[in-house]
Length: 395
Image 1 (cartoon, rainbow, N blue to C red):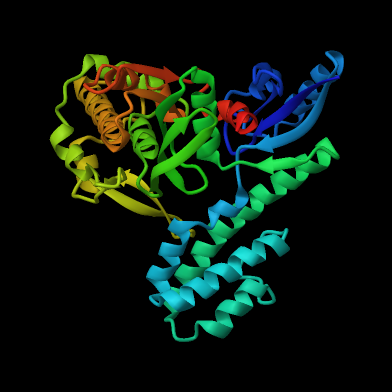
Image 2: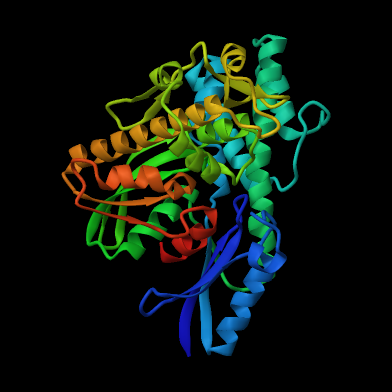
């Protein structure tokens, strides 16, 4: 009997599943859940698609020896989360102790929690017992932060456990989201070695990662964490034009009819530091706003910028909207080229692989391909989250 691996993506939108032949690492079956549900960008757990994978394996005499999923719920409590709680607590020793307490709680806890309602909750007890030196405002901030990130981890632990139960005795292995993106493109590229850039809205905590790929290994050489997200910036611009998630390609298309008239307002906020990390600075025109009730920050445009260019709600576009799209596209292309240049300067490799939702931006990809250091580039066709099922299995 032939052997194969089952890959699964159930991170957010565009859930999917696939089968990879163990012998030659070729994809023998792959589908997004939306192909069966007819729900565009379907974000439901892809149990039906997994079932189709299992049927395919049985039909063609394959044994599924392992399964992997493109999310590791433990990483929602990562470096960024630690930095945020330490900003509130302002004591690294106490913050580390609390951080590791929370990491252990993920192992033991299976239910969502609300620290404002559940007095008996073990985390709530810990906060009330150990943080009486904090003001009520800071206690509220800490609880809000926990509610968002800890419950996000619990959500994906539940998804992991649900899928594990569904597939029975096949072992389900977690692969971090960006690592799955990176594997999907490099191991499909045919390159012996290359740099790999993953750009999306957000993984568990990373928004941009750069890897060095060599034969069967992937080495992380740079990572940008939330809230510095090029993908979420592009989505914020997409929303400002009256579109929604999944409509980013329309903004890219609009850019062809515009001029960079808003570039001077927005581009100064974007910089790449010496570690290859994207830094987005707040300004008169860009800010990070808290999602209501969460203490989770997201990028948005300020009231001052909205007065210059009001949100377009009816899609009755004028030249200013095309100019805005052009400016957003130019920033995206420039950041992409800077990331590529940084990766080349790091290890002098002139081939590059791209993945992540932002790698569906063909204009940015073309700019990178034609930049001064790059001789060849590969973009995984399913660069969005649906392609991470393949990446998780290949890794």
